Amino acid sequence: MSERHTPGPWRFEDEMVRAADDAVIADPYCEETANTRPGEMEANARLIAASPALLAACKEIVQWHNLIRQNYPDMAGLIRGMEQALAAIAAAEPAEAGER
Image (cartoon, rainbow, N blue to C red; front, top):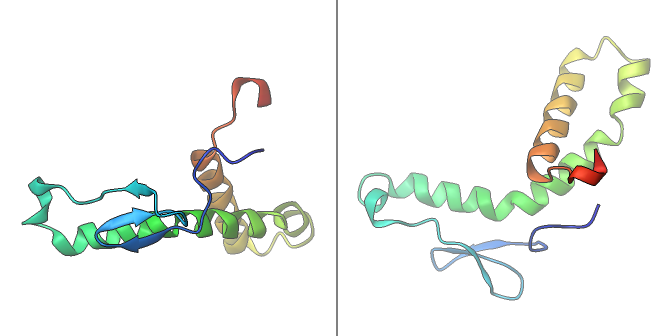
């Protein structure tokens, strides 16, 4: 599947989330919440900036999902975590109609 988002890495800089080429990915600051939740807005910006790395990590982890599920069913917590990673990947990269 090809990337549908701006390739990472992204970074939080000058109150913006930026791509490697300095393009603005997101401007998480808005006047409405700036006065009431400034720390939360910065935390959200940092989470957005980490998104490409988090997606890549999830993809790396779930490569082992079927093997672990079949051979180590007693590792329910790990299996649940992998299933959550699969769901996160699906949310980040929804399948196109032709891919289903």
